[in-house]
Length: 167
Image (cartoon, rainbow, N blue to C red; front, side, top):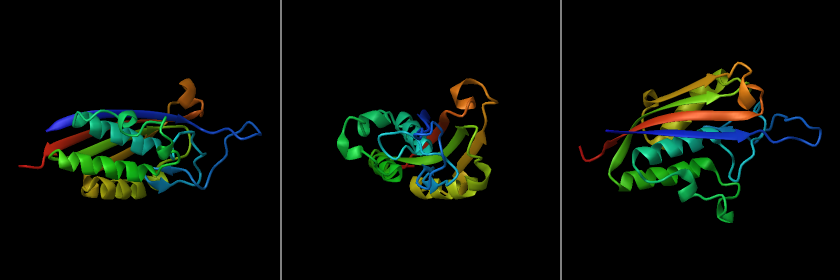
């Protein structure tokens, strides 16, 4: 068994009015969260999936998300992070590993994650090719501390275990 840690953070986009407003297009963990303001990023800015990708790549010593999907490459502009994760899962499978479990902590003042946790766990389980019981997703606030606590964006920590698929 091997373990990897992933982290990512993204700022909310700011409208011309100077505020960040909810968007119908922001995904977290592959699930649309309508009350989540749009996040800035080269791809679709799914901060949760990005942290999971880095945890998986770390566990398998396959680099990091930036080495596989560089933000300097225009082909990844507005890319669906679920497709990026599927590509990483194909690579992990080719190297002889399978996901054991994933544990994710999303840190933000908004949106409230609780109403979306079950859908996110189900979507991640599907993408990771594991039972939903192998995926944990938790939401935390930062109690007003630092930029995340002030509501400027979202940060995510992820831990993943992988096991040899060869038995």
